[in-house]
Every structure is written in C-alpha cells, then in structure tokens.
Amino acid sequence: MKVRDNTIKLNQFLKLMGIVPTGGQAKLMIQGGDVQVNGMLETRRGRRLVLGDQGDSGRTDF
Image (cartoon, rainbow, N blue to C red; front, top):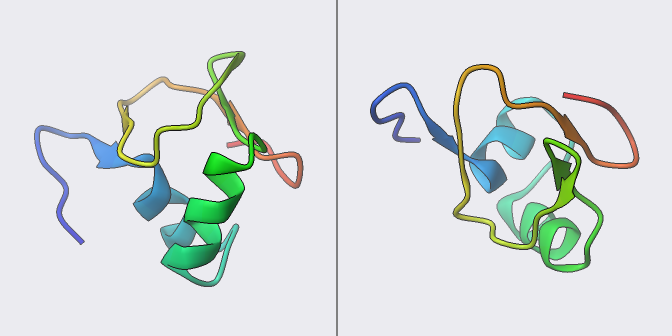
C-alpha cells in the first residue's frame, strides 16, 4: 500500500481500517454509492483522502 504526500486512496483506506475485508469489496461499496467524503457522495475509488477529510460508509464514520 502506497501512501504519498500524506494522502491515501479511498479504497485502500477502507481496507486498512477494516471497514471492508478486501479491495474488491471496497470497490463495490464505493461504486455502489455507499460512501460519502466530506458530506458528498464519492464513487471514485482512487479519490485521495487527506488529513481532516471526514467520511461515512453507512457502516461507520471515518
């Protein structure tokens, strides 16, 4: 897992935090419209999160 410039891809973050067990499930969750970042629906699994971003997966806040 690559962390660059203090950012991390959304799908990698979901997997790292244990919200989903696999990258494939992270992809399905994101593309299925189940994830919000900073109050906005996010469907790009490559979306880079930065310190201070807030999210909601419907299962947990992050």
